[in-house]
Image 1 (cartoon, rainbow, N blue to C red):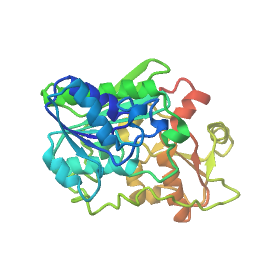
Image 2: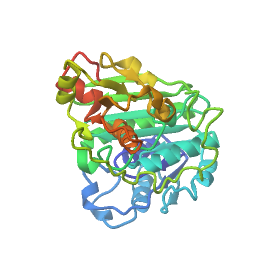
Image 3: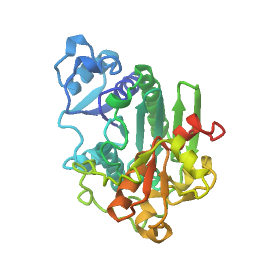
Image 4: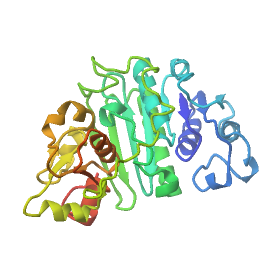
Length: 346
């Protein structure tokens, strides 16, 4: 199998896969080991500072399993080599920390009909996704690449090293379950170490998915500009209606005499988990075809899970001339934490 990223998630995942006796493991990562990596990237140490992460990783993995065959890809996982790499491996384990590569890996696995195990972390929260061919893919949950700046990076939001250990270990377990045939459905596991809770969402293929639906627009890896897909979108500033409002301000507006329309741009599966009363569901991918449902002459609030997708939708609508639309910062997660704890977090 191929591990994408020898960092915070790829480190524990690769270590446990090697220790489990996996015979052939690929490591793709273009970076070098830095001091700032060491608190969470446990494949590496002070003695490998400055080395390519692929070489540092191989040395650590062979210490655990001398019989392991390791194939190094120091060029990383790119649009130019993705199809070739996917064809060479039985399964991809994606521990990368940027959306462009995550979506590239997801699309390449759909096109190559290979299973994908995905992981991500932020602060003390994480998720592990298993996406099997024909059973729902990454874009069934996250249809479009978010704009740069719309979702905090690990550097901006912070990440607890132990969170990487938990999620990376879970990824290794999931990968082994897929290879052994024990796991036969796509799923998404959401973990919160602060609260000690986890929730599993069973996934089904979205008939409108841009990657795996019969009418999917992504037929090859040249359709999407992965290298520029996360370029920043410049907001149109409208002083009377700010681009973003806090959840407290959104709550105040929604309880005013003339409340704004509240639009939820999450996916139906997320909407089924929890929802803000009165919100209208218009998933992000369907917004362009449902503009007629969004009033141009009335205030509109847009929200999603954490505020990233909704910010992108808000910017899109501003560009279309919707002057009174604002994003709800932090999304329904912040609403649950700061306004209504009865709203279930996930």
